[in-house]
Length: 218
Image 1 (cartoon, rainbow, N blue to C red):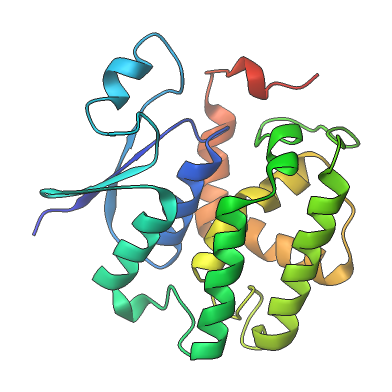
Image 2 (image 1 turned 90 degrees about the vertical axis):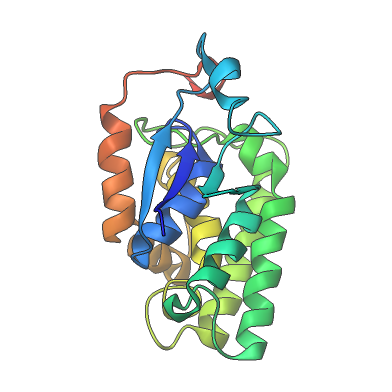
């Protein structure tokens, strides 16, 4: 059986790429990384070879190609069911799926005003229209998950799951923009930032020299 390939964009900016990458790395699912620099002169030609949507991430497993982040995460969960990427209990799993899908579909104000940019310190910036409401909702979700199902460890459902992978770029954004959080949420952010997988991603991100102008806030 050949090793899977995960096609990603720049680590400094590509929040969607971070999600499957950190999940697979954190639970020791083997894969080969193929990085295509976002929006440079070769972007369209290179990404169109592997992605029907001309977006990343894409997971390639032999003849199988999976795009869209949650689809990738569901695929690797089915392929490696022993890695615990969803909580074992049905009630916890239902909440984990709901909060993951809410992240996938929502929080556009946060995304638009606080783009992921690991190299920058933008404390105090990014509080555009609707961002405070998004932060409030995310804080409520994190507190609910931690209170109901977080007793077994520092993550939303105790151990690291797809839900944590989905919110890892939010943790990164909150750090870059210096968002003030309650104690539960800050402790959760600290736990994600301290994972071996996130630290590896960040180390590579800060060494990148590519820039994406729209994600560079002064």
